[in-house]
Length: 328
Ligand code: NDP
Image (cartoon, rainbow, N blue to C red; front, side):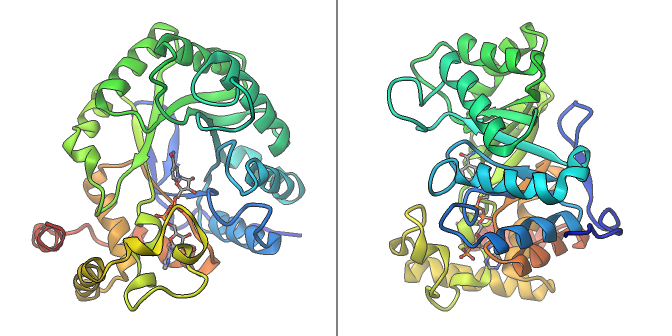
């Protein structure tokens, strides 16, 4: 039986999520990969317990995480109900709906019909009474935003989620979503979007300004670009890495040109006494820009390595310009 580390709150830092009362750990753990029915169950426990022992209190899921879709929520539910139940009030658990989940016209996108039933299914798979954050997973060009945000607001009013979030919404969409939610008495808590040294679209879109303007927080997914921004691929494509196992990171992305850049970034990291993974997280978290980074991991040691960023000094202007000249 798992016994939580008594010192789990000694190192982690927590940041306020926008203007809400909720504090999120600067590092959160996502269950997109490595928690499906195809993945070893014992390793899943190890990942979750290692994270919690380091003060990582926020676990992020979605209805479709697996494979098979839904199995990450099922596995998480098994572990939580058996071994983390007494810690439920120490956890921030999120899930989402917005991508294809079941057959027919009601298992995808952003209708009230889909969001309401999807969350009920997620709660039952995770054996939970409520989630802390429920997200609309991606904008739906065909459903009125009022309907989608109305569903989120009602879910919060019903107590099935404590907070409402959006994911993959750009600055304009974020402002509109926040305004509609506010008119329904539910503040927008957070936007979850891709952000890392390679993919800086959120800077170009002025998304951070938009989030500040509406008082919402931010959490970056794929802050390590699925492992590209770590030591994983510096010398090639190792067996067992995500690039050999997942349709979401294909080997053709790892070109010689990219590897040369990664090796140059690795040199900058070494000079400041960090691994490339740590420096990539330092970059994402620089100057308090994000509330949290949402990492993934296939091994417990990766979580331990990544969590070291918490005590790292902020990047200097010189280091930032060295990094940006490699990426240019
Ligand atoms: P990352 O960019 O953190 O990539 C994680 C992967 O990088 C790991 O699985 C591992 O891959 C490798 N890795 C991590 N740390 C290290 C290390 N220290 N050294 C070497 N390799 C390392 O994030 P993910 O792409 O996993 O996404 C994180 C979470 O974001 C998801 O679980 C999900 O919750 C969320 N997400 C949300 C989306 C949305 O649309 N809202 C979309 C995508 C993700 P390997 O298997 O090779 O070991």
